[in-house]
Length: 202
Picture 1 (cartoon, rainbow, N blue to C red):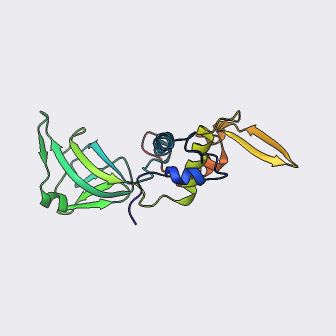
Picture 2: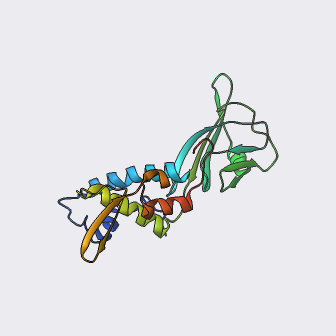
Picture 3: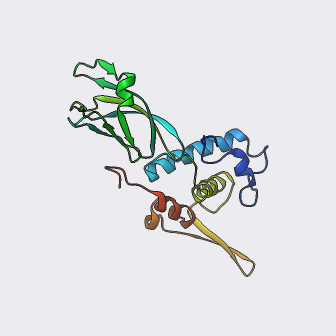
């Protein structure tokens, strides 16, 4: 199965829930796609990892050991590494040096042969791919729910809980501070289950 390129597609959004985004005239593919990009960016910030495979160029700090820590977990591949010296000159790793790297999914590289990553600040440029190979169903549904509530005109905010009791529709806004992100358990509960806290992120 090919790797996902989005948390959800426009086709999936059109048939989600009650099909409120079914109209191509009212909700063109470009509108849904743009919403997905925004939601994916928001989810990444909360989750601490990319929901789909994503290529990143990161400037990491060498610490004089054979290990180099990266920001994002779920690392699946490293395509390039360059050492940047104190005057800014970059030296790319050879194919043999790249092959010597052990990739840890949690976001760490280790040089199998024991050579050290030279100590320094942002002195290694690493191009790597990280993210989930398959988007979990509950994470997809949470993103679709946010998309629907964001695009469909409504007086009910995205952070509100809604329901129907004895034929009466109701909506109650939930305190966002309880779950912080969207203020709705349908989304926040899912994000909380998958979330990994990055260094320096509350």
